[in-house]
Length: 365
Ligand SMILES: Cc1ncc(COP(=O)(O)O)c(C=O)c1O
Image (cartoon, rainbow, N blue to C red; front, side):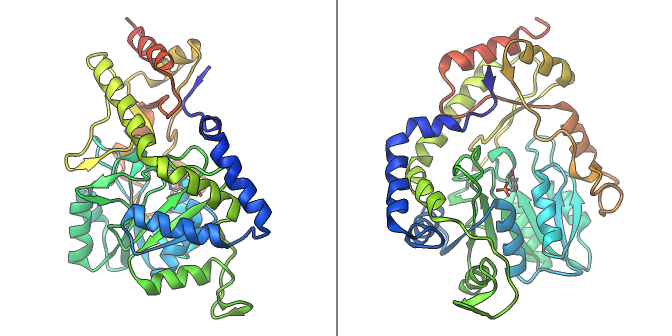
């Protein structure tokens, strides 16, 4: 079986370094918010080109706490895509704010700035741009809308570690950049983890308070807060993996180039990279008018192609009919009918990738 992702590969590839990191933490006796988290925050901030980075418990919490720290809450509207992980929308509601859907661009699966502009109203406070599949959203145009309307721009970078928009790394461009270290992500821990990059020191301080009971100093809550801490073991593992992110990304981009070349002309719709950006191919997502047929065909050949995501958020039971903007999202609905993620990850062998290519080519051949 060739899965669409194989997070255990990174453990096998870097076993020694990771074991060293685990022993370092276990021997230290510090397991929560200690020197490993502090060092990782510094190293991640430097890699991202952001002045502040704050480790938290998950990508969902990164979004939730960033929204709160930026002052977004009850009655405030946040423009979001529906074609994303449900966590993006869940985080907006966790902050007490109101998500409003806007449709995506067909070519890039990211927010369509024209639709975002239409969705803005007097209560809109922020645009939450998701860099889906590893492709930066159109930050030039979304940034221009945010500036002209006085809105905050928040980046959901859960799938886009290290992706670049012009000469900047995603996460350092908006008012906050929110990352997930879920094990299958481009930079993955061996458990849950997340991080916020912030531009302003006051926002960073607020997130540090919110992640630990609202404490400004130990045992003294300045405000009400939460418990959402990155632990030392995950931070130490991430410190081992961060210097390898560039090489892993290059390998993802190499595999994507092979697919783009080999699958050209086979009838499946191939991903396009927005000019001026680098796509880090968290997922390699193709389109097919007969997606279910293609998926069954690949499965019959032992290939675990997956669908990200099978149902847009506005059509899920928890959200259907109650979130504004959900009435008119034709591109989001079409994407969910047509998309299929092919296996792509560091550790996928050339032979395995060739098996996938041959299988796609033999579909209806
Ligand atoms: C686009 C997007 N946003 C947010 C999240 C939430 O991250 P986490 O699972 O770490 O809470 C994920 C990952 O699941 C994601 O893919």
